[in-house]
Amino acid sequence: MPLRLLGPALALAVSLTGPSLAAADETAMLPVVKLAPVDLSDAELRRVFFGKVVARETVNLAFQVGGQIVQFPVEEGASVAGGSVVAQMDMEPFELALEQAQANRAQAERTVSRYEQLAGTSVAEANLEDARTAVTLNDIAVRNAKRDLDHAALHAPFDAIVAARMMPNFSTVSAGTPVVRLHDMSELRVEIDVPETLFQRAGRDPNVTFVARFPASTQSYPMQIREYNAETAEIGQTYTITLGSDLPQEFVPLPGASVEVSAILQLGGQSIEVPNSAIAIGNDNQTYVMVFEPTGAGQGKVIRTPVEIIPTDRGKVAVKEGLSEGQEIVVSGANQLEDGTEVRRFTGFGN
Image (cartoon, rainbow, N blue to C red; front, side, top):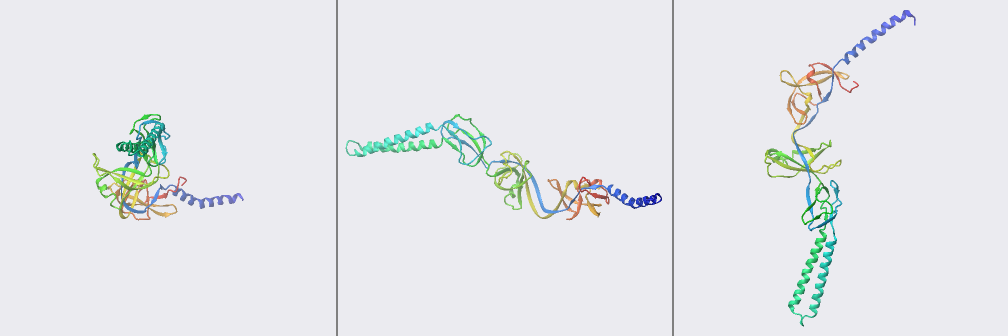
């Protein structure tokens, strides 16, 4: 291009790109705000209680006979199947006692047979009756020996978790001494203390439901009332309620584990809830939010909108008046914006 034409061409390029660059710079200078849509949800009241996991049933197993433990195959924290052997004594003394009782019974039966053959001769009727009584007593002795032999082994009464081994292996224990503690964890059970007003409605009002959450999981688990203690606690005038549900699939909660239980009362109808951070308070103590009104692609202006709110205990507030479904609001930093401020929508950190 001839040099005499280069100057006018550059001037034309600058005149064409200047306004667009200025507009881009102006847009880039607008405040960036994070927005959230206003949605309707079921109107409800919610209270949170902190409880603990409990076993459906806890038993201390003990031998009904005395002897030496020679087998103790279970470990603390392990799962055992119902009917499996938990501990076993040395069986030989019980087997010998059974053999002795069976031999004594056989001897007594032979005596009765011999006396019956001699009945009416030199054998008195009293001797025959005594022999028959001996057979009966030896029958009882055999039954007791069999019972002792059966009780020389402890079996799990249900599918359980071994909570504690209360005696070491090879210990000699007497009858009734607890040997092992088992937890029945076939169902998730949770205990919470609730005030009298909730206690009176729980289980009777279908609009009252319970949901549990664990620190180790993001899942929520619907719970149902299983039982309750009809006596109040000494402090606080609260009642203990036991809730239950199916066991979680992803983990097994152990007795004593902490749990957060939400008691939810459905009020009927729908309500609007927004994050606490979206609420600002003006100099006139009026609560308000900043409603976003789009004016172009990715940008718009914010309108100060007074709202009437009701606090909740789950990080949000319920809006009674001032908002409607489908609007978008600024979720944080509303108090830093003025009514009518031009803003850009936050779409990511590359924005």
